[in-house]
Length: 71
Image (cartoon, rainbow, N blue to C red; front, side, top):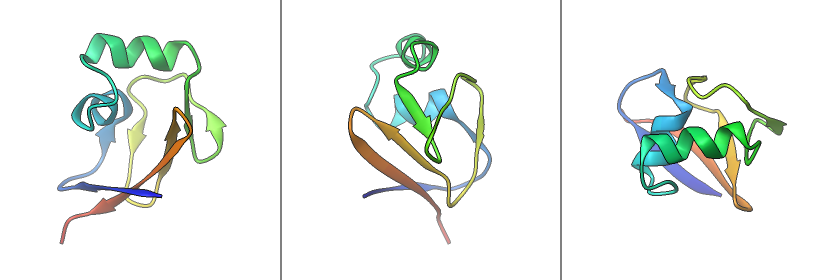
């Protein structure tokens, strides 16, 4: 499982995809979410601006990512 370190919470889901390089742009990230390509905590997530918190896990393209808050 990949770790994603965030320095504040919440963080919007589409921004995580963009900042982690999983989508080239915010628009592409939103499109991927609209297509049902992203799971959050094991469920398909359709909300582009889903507020993500430390401990949340998202899955994209067969990879899992867990959010950790920077201390």
